Image 1 (cartoon, one colour):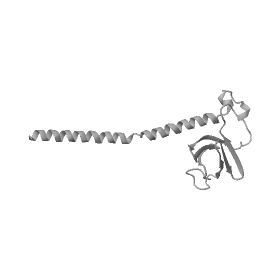
Image 2: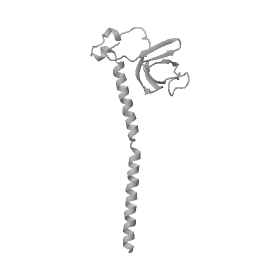
Image 3: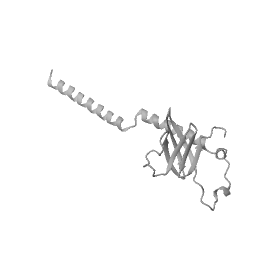
Image 4: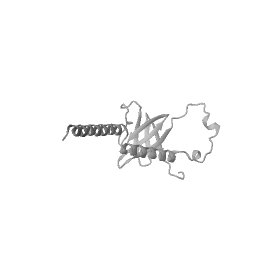
Length: 150
């Protein structure tokens, strides 16, 4: 073979290798199909749970009376069940307690990512619809409200 044919083939192989490596680098920075699907499923489950937990008065568009928000004493902390999701026995519950969010796994006493006892809010029970937590001697329960009310 002549020298120019070898050079042209070598140049073509180098160009192809460069194109393949740049394409693989571009793909690695983007999230994978499964990562995107996982995020979409979690967002859908959170949205559905928020819809189920929303009080009926808010769903119908009724406005709360001004006397409900005015209080002279410190209000009791409120436990709100934001979402429950998972598969089989691996169920997680996202709760909002007094303005702070916590994630609990079934069978674990303390919230995920929390140092033991730091939050002082421990999980007592988790069923398919309800979560029961305790802070010191106070026990709080929050449940998912089925469509159409209680």
